[in-house]
Length: 186
Image 1 (spheres, rainbow, N blue to C red):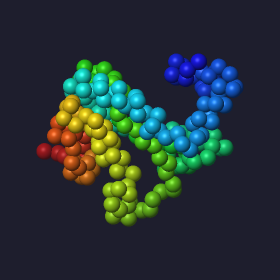
Image 2: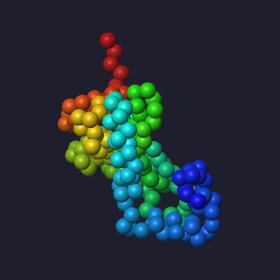
Image 3: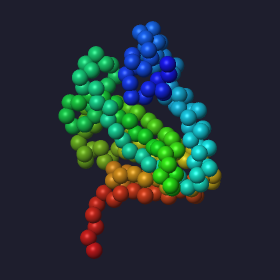
Image 4: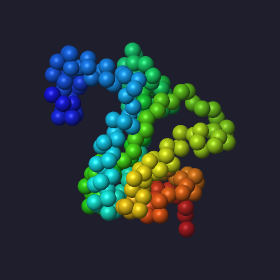
């Protein structure tokens, strides 16, 4: 039984038996297994579909995987202002201009330690040391393999309304559509 055939099921239920479940957990725990390697063949197929589509919406956003009640789980971090524990995941999905999902273009995950100091101090950090750097990395990662092959329109929410993203070099055939952080009255 393949996990992909039952994506809504738990690992034990989808794998069919305890032996298969244990094999899956060992595979995921293997230090040699990298997220980028697992997604590589999927991404190749996504790039192919993007090129065929011609115009692609690259939609990115961050989500929290909350595991506060999983007390034995190691490697979790803070996911919000409270004491909730989990993993932050930033994904970029490709969608055709007709609204057809084409697949995952880019994804990164990280854990957060306690707050990184006062807001005034955080503003002084270079963008590469800020959590908001993920928006720039995702634009670069999403465009990889698509340069000049498809028009890419990057969509993001107001959290991406940062100077460095607009100033970043992008492919000539890409655009940004970012929801503004501030409301400007006429």
